[in-house]
Length: 212
Ligand SMILES: CCCCCCCC(=O)SCCNC(=O)CCNC(=O)[C@H](O)C(C)(C)COP(=O)(O)OP(=O)(O)OC[C@H]1O[C@@H](n2cnc3c(N)ncnc32)[C@H](O)[C@@H]1OP(=O)(O)O
Image (cartoon, rainbow, N blue to C red):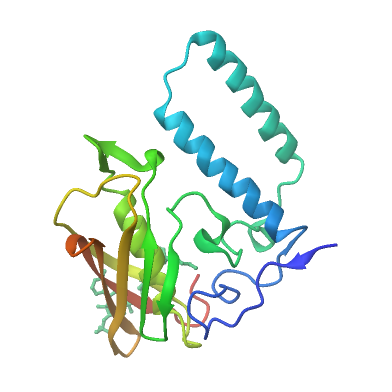
């Protein structure tokens, strides 16, 4: 039996993205797919942090090849893709650290995020590219809630205020600041306790009919 991946209205902030990319994708089991993504995230972290002997590397490479061969025959077009559409923290993809929503309405959202070993830049700090990933994910979703026409990021300005540590629960708060015609202005802060680690300001432009 398959179940619909999407199906929640995007008027409910951060509960489903049915209208964002493509509706109608089916998945054999949401729970099983989530399990696969969780395992993949752990593999990413373990690979990033490992320095094993060569014999172990040969074995690991073979196992990873086996996994990719198993999935090769099940590749589907974007409209049927599951990753990015699951109604779970992180939307079932492993690119962006999963954002866990604590509170949300049509104009703001507050939640938690943690950067694991995979997102290390150097010197114990999260990579400077990983932080905008999270801001784009959260602001991009908030820009489109409330039944609004789909928009895309036109710019995203990020200020790095302090080192973002790995493996710590951080809070992220974002808000929809204003709207001028097709332009939507949003902002956000990433904090550890009361300390602002980074803040962002983005412009999201509502797409015209036929714009990809
Ligand atoms: C569930 C998913 C969650 C994750 C969501 C993530 C969201 C994303 O990352 S989307 C992917 C990244 N973004 C993109 O690929 C967008 C690529 N760019 C584009 O497609 C286009 O440039 C687009 C749509 C942003 C704007 O193009 P277009 O529709 O032609 O707008 P255009 O008519 O030029 O501009 C509209 C207004 O916006 C302003 N504007 C557009 N771009 C910018 C910019 N970079 N800076 C300042 N102003 C801008 C224009 O000046 C204009 O203002 P005004 O109306 O006052 O004259």
